[in-house]
Image (tube, rainbow, N blue to C red; front, side, top):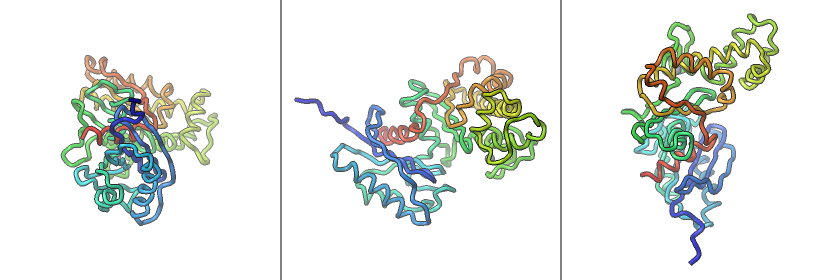
Length: 316
Ligand SMILES: [Zn+2]
């Protein structure tokens, strides 16, 4: 008998972002068999998004692959039990929309929903940097700062579904900087791509020799300047590393994880911020513990969330 080329169980995994919609077929060993990316339908109709998902699924349905579920990750707060989006500033049409019923009706598969940072943590534990670990914290440094916590092998969602909001833990209450969450001095205000740009602008006047200009500044440009030795860029990344280190030291003392996995575009700047990050951890976290906690760059890249979403559906 020839061996079945397809795995037994496949998940239709969806990364539903405010800008892009990515779909993938993920098998039960963590392989991505197919993937496709398109723009997320904009506007105030959730049906457009549902239709786009149905069309994407239809493309692969004719392959007769054994799809067992659709598992979606979104940038927002979700009610996993009801598979409903509770809060998602970039996907307003989906908030309180009966996503589960509509998708189940259209696709005929069980529907799972997860927050994107949580899904990424699970993906890294399944086939990425945290393989084989049971206590994992994942930190995503992007436009904002996201986080996911896995305790004893299980995603920790909290009592109200909002655990892991590492970006909104306070690292500098006296900074006077207000976060969009309402708090002052959140980690996200110092350790995100947005923060790199803001901190650079704030210090331009103090570094007249800098090659950076105020116009259309991006975190990428600050990183490039830092690699060339620009003093302003280096100071900004050092400050970034300082606050990130404070945040991670708090996490280490609170959770005592085996590993902290760091992902997101800003990880490119690792060599520019890591020394200061480690220095802060060394200074602030319990020494005997922090010596044993591994801090690693993520390995799954953009696919961590898709893989994690698939894993969560397969585990259920
Ligand atoms: Zn905040």
